[in-house]
Image (cartoon, rainbow, N blue to C red):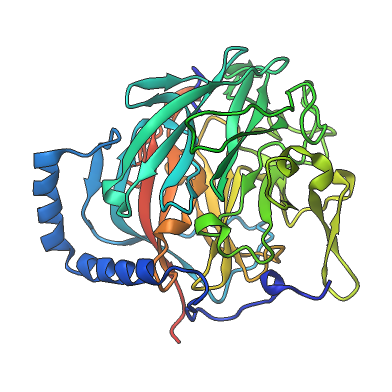
Length: 459
C-alpha cells in the first residue's frame, strides 16, 4: 500500500483430520498428475535448482522477477500467539513450515490472483510499476492496474498484458483494488475507497490511509482485460451504501472473493462468496481502528455470479449468525450481517481459499497495528465456510511488514499440504523511526511468493 500511494450443505459439514481427497468431477486429473510429477522433481531440488539457474541465466525471467531461491533450510515460524487470542488452536492443522523457496515479481502491490478456465491467473495491482507501466491509486486521477500471470511453476511465472483503468476516488482520497474473480470468461474487478491521506500524522505517529472507506462496486471485462465496462456504482453511491468520510465503521469495505479453485470449481452451490474485514462499533476508538489493514471483524457474503447481479445489492446475502440447530442464517440486509470471526483491534485485511484435498477453508488475516509499523498475520482454518475458525499459525512480525496475504489455489499440491503464500511487504520500512527488515528473505515491495507446508499430526 505504497504512498504515491437450511440443512448443512457440503460447505458447512465439519471435516476432521488431514486425509486428502480427490474430486473426480473437478476436471483436474491432468493437473493433479502434472503436479505430482513436479513434486517428484522438487524432491531432487539441488539438481533442479542448478538447471533452473542455468536456464535463467540464458533466457531471463519475465515479469520483473528478481529472486528465485532454492531451499535454504525449512523453518517453523516462532510461536508468539497473544494471550487474548480468541481462536482455539487447530488440532488437525498444527502449523506452517516455510521451505525457503521463494520468488518475487514486479514492483507493485495488491496482488489477488484468480484462476480462470483458460488456466491463467488474472490479478489486480497498483501503486508501482509492472513491466514499466505505472499505476497510482491516490487522488481523483487514481488508476488501478490489472495483469495476466502465466505459468504453473511459481518460480518461473510471467506477468503480461498489464494495463491500468481510471478510478476516480472523489469524495474520498484514494481508490484501491480488492475482490477479483474470473468466472466463465468474465473478469469482475472490485475497488474500494480510503481516507483521508496516504501519509497522515496524528499525535506523533505517521499513519497510512487510516480510514477504510466503502466498497464501490465491480467493473467487468468479457475479454480477459482487453476492454472494460465501468461499474454503475460510484464512491458517493457505493454498492452497499456505506459511508466513511468521517471515520465511521464499515463492514464491507474491502471484500475479497473466496478462492474456490479454477473457475469456481469447488463452490458448494455455484455462488461466489466474499470475505471482508470491518467494524461495527466506532465509538471512542483508537485512531486508525478500521483501516485498509486494521479492523475488528470478518464478514461473509454471497451472490450468484453474473454481470447484472454483482452490481445489484439486492442480489447479495449476508451471513447473519446461526439458527437454533446450528445452521447458518442468511439475510438480504447488511444491517443483519454478523461476523464469522472477531478479534477486536487485532483483525484486518482478509482472504480465504478452499483447500479441496483437505476439505478445509484457510483464512489469512493481517493485523496492521498502527497501519505503518510491524504487522502480525495469522492463518485460520475451518471445515465450514462460516466457521468456527481455529488457529493454525500466528506469524508475529511476518514480513516484517507483510500484507495482502492470500493462497492461490492453483499452486496447492495434490495432497493439499504444500502451497504458495502470496503477499506484498515493507512499503514503509522506515516510518516512525522503525527499521523494518525483510523476513523471511524475499519479502519486499512487489508480488512475493513463499512456499509453505501445512503441518498435520501423524495419522
